[in-house]
Amino acid sequence: MAKSPELVELYVHGAKLDRLIREAACQKTKTDNDLLRIPAQLYPPLVGRLKIYPLDEGLKSFLGARCEKAFLEKMLEVRTDILDWAAKVSANGLSLSGKLLLAALTSCGLMPEDNRLRLVDQLGKDSITWLDAKPLEDEVWQQIFTPAEFEEYVQRFREEWLAHPENTFDQLGRFSSDDEIGMYTDFKENIKIAQRISRLKKTTKRSRNSTPRSTLI
Image (cartoon, rainbow, N blue to C red; front, side, top):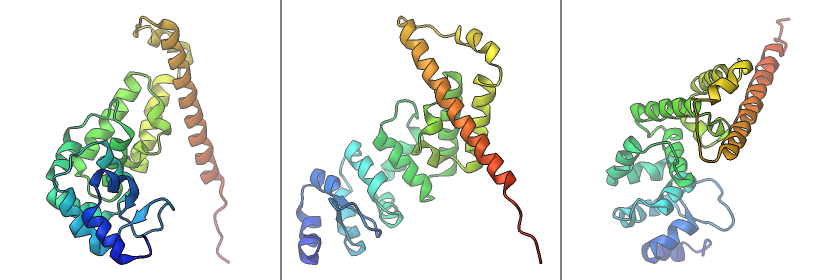
């Protein structure tokens, strides 16, 4: 089908949408072999069909993982509910498809700055308050941070949970659970993640600082 423009056009106009958003991609770059690339001239009819499609996990995954900026811009013109969702959604417990869509909107410069800053603030505060280091190594979440913001987040996490190991046990005392063994196992795992990211950041910083500067001859 991919080699026949006529068949691709028929597919865009007639395929079931739940199937299409699983099988297709709207991007200029080469896609996965199993995905059908939709050419830019067919973006308008596809956007028209998706205008009333529910903003469910399938559509979020399609928009977040397999659509370029030009397609997203057209979608936002007719689907104001997408940015409304982004303005209200909580970062806590968000599905992968939701994270992908937020990251795509941010990477393409389509996320309103106040929405982005709200998510950055919530992620950082909740992660540090509840000793959840998973966002530190989540490459999807990292896309909503600027490099400076992410560095600051890592530093704040390090100061809270790694800088004073003698106080860690007392800090953990404020948490409680019916499954204490599971809770402390989870804490241990998150501390390991934070230590790994912290070491990586320090190594990267040392490497940058130790790189010889070129000299003028």
